[in-house]
Image (cartoon, rainbow, N blue to C red):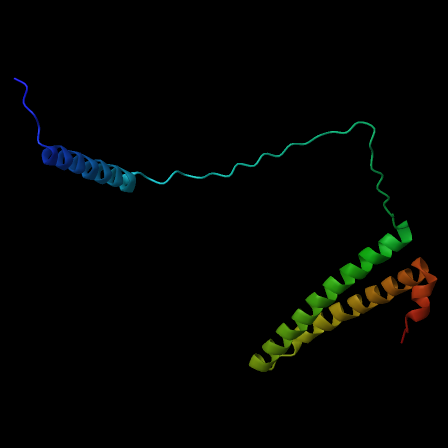
Length: 136
């Protein structure tokens, strides 16, 4: 019962096996998803004993702080006044009624008085600033 296998059959079988092996591994490789790459960062805080940081902060005097606050408020009020004047002009051109100007002019005088008071306070805050301001 010992039967010999021809050499060509053996070579053909090995060749078919190699082709099948390459084909199957190629098919498996193409259907395999790419691995997902994730970047993970970690923040680590380290406290170093004995090291302190000193921060110096300049504080305005009460006169200078008050002058700065009033000047900023006056700019805001002046901006609002310009808007009111524009609204009064639009209303006047539509109706030729000048009554809107009376309240705007009264508001304008209040803003001007507040601005002059703030300028005086700025001049008290720093004499070099006061020397550079020309009052009408």
